[in-house]
Length: 400
Image (cartoon, rainbow, N blue to C red; front, side):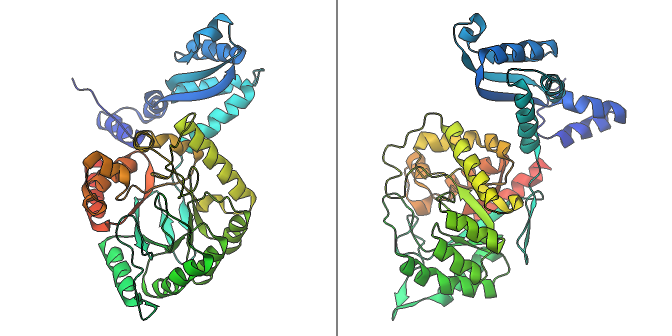
């Protein structure tokens, strides 16, 4: 006898086929084998008790506060426990119920659909990112003099950027396996000060033009300034990577107008202040609410829903414990129904764990990136492309 750990329904289907289960039986049994634990916040105690009784009748259960069972409190959070078959039956039953349960049925349908949704093919015109097929690697090109990781390429000679050096560096990243090149002209390390729009344009504009003409992968601009993003998009960039989470309405309209891809990142505070005792009422819930609001604003502004990528913002207003919890629970962000980007590369939380410098954090970066990939990340943003590329090849071969 063996105890099997199945992470994918296709693996379970193959096992059933191997033992010659009837195809119709497979169709019936697959939903029974896929279990979920869903958290619902702030449900009325009346609704929660109905929910529990209904789920019990289907063979599942709902955990709720003791006070909700005894009638001492009016609201409670809930944990719904059941397989897909039970949840589908529950949803069909709740759709006709009062006390807000019909809305809960709709929310349940959307949450499960988003969670199981295959990532889209992101159409960037010349380039198509088929995120459902494999993980993508975003290689970092920092055109700054003060990058936290020591890889800043903003070096001047006779007041000119060393464009040849930057191009060679980007080409090397592509050769090593980078699927996207992300260009940034302002350091966003903790305690950093913003640079002027003029200075950021000086650092990035000619670089974007050069890379778009000479490398065969999409180029992303890492900026939260609409003027910088517009210049980059005019020069051929395909994606805007915005650490501010599209707070600027002008940025949202701009991205919609250019039909560009966008990375919406969560950050608490600003780069200068974000590490001053960051605090959350409920870490994952707070980040989910922030990202959901930003997604809604983006779509309302006309940004293509299939071109939106989310990033929980490792290291941006988070403690060591926060970063580890995000990576541990990353799959919970799948409920938003958007591809997930994670950037752990050389970050200080790795240094705190390993007591080493940014340049010595390759193994920590690879380990955390693989964990992110296995928990649902589709794009991994790194400095050390080759190390991650090789690790992904081995990991994906094992998982086949």
